[in-house]
Image (cartoon, rainbow, N blue to C red):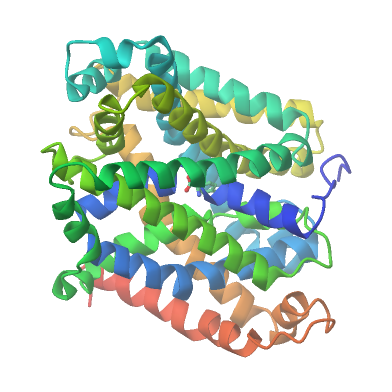
Length: 446
Ligand code: PFF
């Protein structure tokens, strides 16, 4: 195995920053509002909050433990603990590939919006924001921006994870919080905003606890925390042995939740104020946010700052799933970091092109109106991550002895680990049973 990747992240804060950098991204700012918009607003928020604690944090701790113990990529990590379980690592690699097939495209949209805010064309065009988004969706520029995003990720990864990401996260994250807070205050003064608050904050409990809502919320918890596909295994392989895994996972989860809630507090009042539909789907933030900026003084400048930050937040996430693949190729095939990075970037571009073919009305396979983009999104957040998360619980809390998790969560007895029993039993019973129950219920089997 090559030693090139076995650098480690700086200190305690760095572990939180890089893991939060992976977690906070399009998942909280783009995907969360559109999922909440389609699945009952406040009802979805409530269930999502619960899922982060009951499902997301325990699975994250299991992944952290595997990664830091083995100091290997996802496949190597599981294999070195138990050979037959290496397939769980392969599942993660597959998940990272599928995510690459569409995440870069959405990140490219953010780049396009950053540029068109900068040139002012977004706000000077006579077309509505909805029409502008549709025409961008049907243009070659999408391919260009997707390519640029993969290139940016490539250039950072090739230098190694520890440089760049830490620094970027330190500046980006506080800035992102600040602009979201400013925007949340701004939208509070928009006419009709109160209906948005009602939609996002007053849950209909009957809608909240349906199998469908819980299923989608579990998927969103996995997606937004980057768990269930080996990403946190890979990142924890760079953690130091004195990092406190439990507090790291809680900090990451809380920061991610905060961004998602702030995003909701910005988007929904603006949606209702502008007379748009909360169930707009994937285009939701791209048609809603410009509505907020357009009447603000220095509209373009605010818009540029926001999309720069969204782009950076997306970049610290693309780096993380790119690294899952790069570390896999590098260590499993014993090739250089440069070669591993190139293979990963080329594969990512190929998959994105597959997703984009549809946009240009080129049908390679008859998928009955479903695009590869939708297939990649659906299979990662609703199949691969659920299964990956479920088997991660089974691996860490059934296959491995309790001592394995106890050692990792207490740093071999150096910390008291008072929360250990609660976390361990949640991981052993509550999380897997909930995932199985909801999965089967959603398939109509129960
Ligand atoms: N958590 C990221 C986001 O919310 O944007 C997406 C993500 C990154 C998912 C890395 C999975 C992953 F391995």
